Image (cartoon, rainbow, N blue to C red; front, side):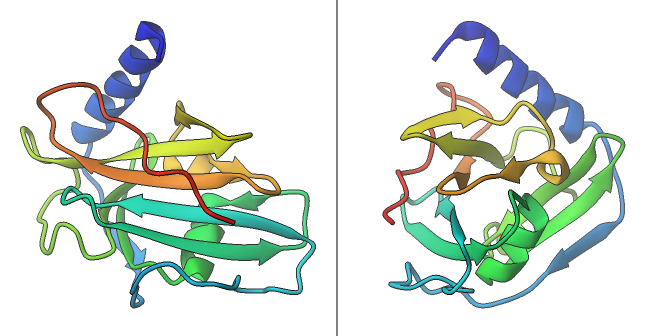
Amino acid sequence: MHKHVLWAGATLALLIAGCGGSQTGTSASSSGATASCVNATAAHRAYVVVEHQSGKAVQRCVGFDGASVDAGTLMRQSKIEYQAQTTSFGLGVCQVDNEPARFSECFPQGRPYWSLWVESGGSWTMSQVGFSQVKLQDHQALGWHYVPTTGPSPSPPPAPTP
């Protein structure tokens, strides 16, 4: 991965970390990959791939009919639990699939955070925009990887399996 992409992603994470906001989100259960898509009769498919700090991965497929689907709609329809806070940069995601189990602030200093990725054509790229600005097209994936704030640059989650 290029240094400017890593720097931009790290900068976005740091900028979001410094912002507070009110908590919003959605709740649902998640128990691993599903064989079929939500909205299976829709014309297009997008995926959500979550990799926990432990390495456990969860995947969901969501069908949609428009030219694209926004990340919030994709997450809600996937039924993967998440919590977010509104910041001056948009929506910051604090919890995915019940990790961390509890939080009082979305991006606490020196604590793990959810890195945001977009997969297209078999290649992951760390998102350069906030969660609320991500739009996915047919066969793209939204990826989450829970990573520590120290150590090497975050790696993407595993590739989606259609």
